[in-house]
Length: 88
Image (cartoon, rainbow, N blue to C red; front, side, top):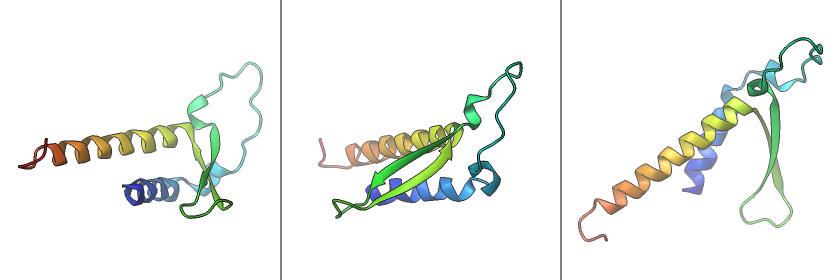
């Protein structure tokens, strides 16, 4: 399951355009700020290591997509294992 989540995260990172990863100019005080395009960076520990971590930067919208996709995958996995004969 961790492999699938990590694969989805990598796929979402590949979708992110290179221009979106560079900081944009500061908006003027009068202009409304679009929070969905704000870039958020997260550090994720690598499996099997106490020190190594990978930094992933995505927009809020992309993080929301990754989270929704992971939740959907978890629900489908749970439903598929519950519907098998012999499982409770």
